[in-house]
Length: 628
Image (cartoon, rainbow, N blue to C red):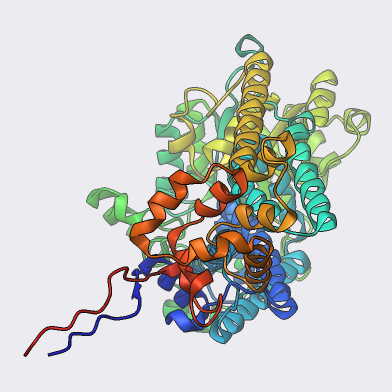
């Protein structure tokens, strides 16, 4: 009976199969190739890289604007007339798309690292194009509808730039392994020079980025100012329905400095608290009085307003995703809230001896109190007995009249103007969105003895940046969170930051040099003169160990025929090879014999240097015959 042994045993390559299979659906060995990647595939790799950075920017931006998710939803509500929470679905979709693109890019880089030809599957191309188009469309939409929100991106860098810099250094240092490998395998000097210059330009730029980084939190702790005062925006709308008595009480429980409220005057002259132009979002008017749902809030009598429920919507829509964390008793009370009269709030403010910021909304021109709604509101405040200096008047309309009726009110501007202009008009309080303010503005307002307040600040990182910048007070939906922040999230003295910066750069530079030395060891040896007798084909063959390509096969052929005396030795049996390696003292022959066994055997195969010989182990024993 004759027993046959296979000509070759292929080593299992599970990782390589998964790499090429997931990226290009090339699961079989014969489908893989070490040939150069085509220009078309290089174009797709460039598109993939561009999409990665674009989705990274969008993902980072949308993560950082978490502070304004409620504002975004309210903005969409004004456009569509329907309240839906779009912020979280956008975040989840963005995270999924970014993760997918990142995985594809890692697979592509792994192809480059192991010398495999890139060939992305058509399904990946379709998904890649879809992600790219969707990201461009969404970013363009934000640019048109919410342009000022892009300023959040630059403000966030004041809190994250030092850490993003370290992360970028780690990434570019890890990329050195692939760059060094490409440099070692390349046979074109022009490509090597361009590759090194481009990589060095990026690395040096990252090393010097801290020179452009500005953060108010890079300061000595002794220079840190007092913690900003917190004003409850519409009370505590994360814990109770906005502009209700429960909301204001919750805000005061967390030691807020003051309360901010939106005031309207009803059709019969009763000041009440409401933010929206209609009652559809924050009351049950569509169920109780559907015919009045589209009417302006101020065009309804108080007899109708007081019958509406102003709490059910909060439990149903859960605008801040906080309802599930509330105690059962608070949930019950929140669901039974009604529209709040201004006099109720003023009684609470007087009892707690706190400040109040009033934003009075104008009424339609056909409103019966169109000419005197300001007088009605001011007189209501004065009749409450609150000290006038505790009232901040935020409305620009009829400011001269307000100053005559209540000269003790703090006049506030919600528009960014020159400090001297404000002083000339007896305005002592400036209420601006946090995206409109920089540290120079803060210093300028302070030098003119103007009080600056920024709104709406909900995230601790943003609160920390404004604290370090010297903002005296902020308006917040999250008073229960910010009141517990004892100090800025991080603060670094300039000397410590410089030390971290220089140390990180030095470590990165050392690792990069080590990687290039390791990847280009054979070329360095030849340059130093230890193996100068090698011909060019031997040098490139030694530098491209375990890389099978058309160029390497040609070099093998040249090397075999350039050293005919030893080509016969390479084709001897496996058992004789160790003796050959030990007996030759010529450095050329020694280096030839140091080539991997699989590579040696491939040189002696009948099909001359073809196939995937470097992935196989050829048996060294002869076929045996035994009697049956």
